[in-house]
Amino acid sequence: MFTPVSMRSVNSYRAVAVETSVSTANPHELVSLLFEGLLQSLALAKGSIQTADMPTKGRAIGRAVRILEEGLKAGLDEARGGELAVNLRTLYDFCIVRLTESNLRNDAGMVNEVIQLIRPVAESWSQIRDQVVVPPRSALN
Image 1 (cartoon, rainbow, N blue to C red):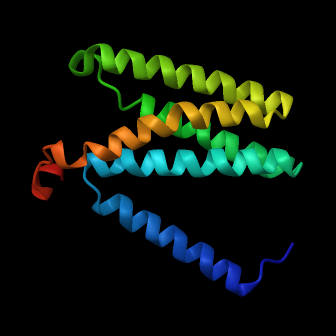
Image 2: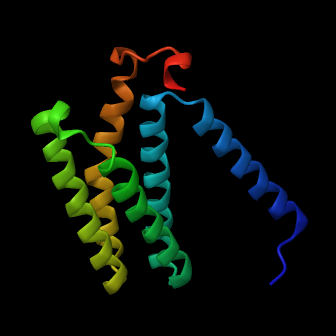
């Protein structure tokens, strides 16, 4: 199927904007971007289930699971994060299971459950931004 030029332009702009955001972000901002992408994917998955758009649902849930597994969960440091890191790992594992079940059952309620669990964590992460000591840009390279 042919994608209109304007849509390809928008998609290219989005890709460049995301790449630029990631390349200039500090570690706290990177996690914020992961939460943002996760919540967007969850909203898309929920909407896709409600409209019976199964291909989009599958891609959105797959992306959400990858963000949870390869981004948020992989970034946890239980040695330094202690009980909080362990609890977050447990939460992320639970969310992955619920999303997998949601995908199999086409259940938007399960996706909504994950949204309700993740949103407060994302908001809390955002609220601590000013309390996080960010190394100078040169130390990150």
